Image 1 (cartoon, helix red, strand yellow):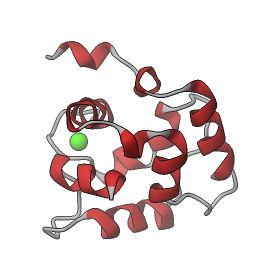
Image 2: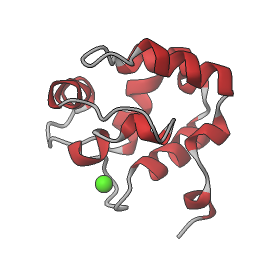
Image 3: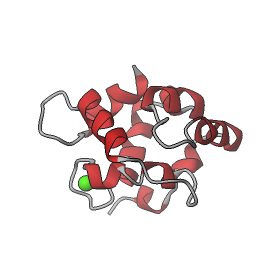
Image 4: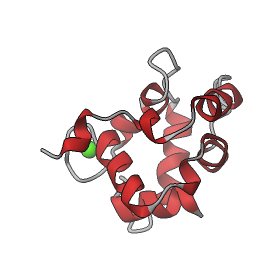
Length: 115
Ligand SMILES: [Ca+2]
């Protein structure tokens, strides 16, 4: 178990940027990962930081972010945030899942949030 598992994603980001990103997707159906990444500052993180953020999101440490984990994506930024809908998680996966296995690996995640 790496030391980063005790860290929060918000440790990597500015509080105001996270609040702005959450505000943009507070309405059901309005979550867009690229927009969220840009506003929150995720898109500007280094490969090393994104690897740590991926490990936090991969709650069961399977090496992949599955849809069940994606549903709770916004809660990592604010515990009171809403769950993502099935439509939003499907779109998240279909955009990033280059190898078509239905889940997001670390390389796919890097490319999803930074490009
Ligand atoms: Ca997982």
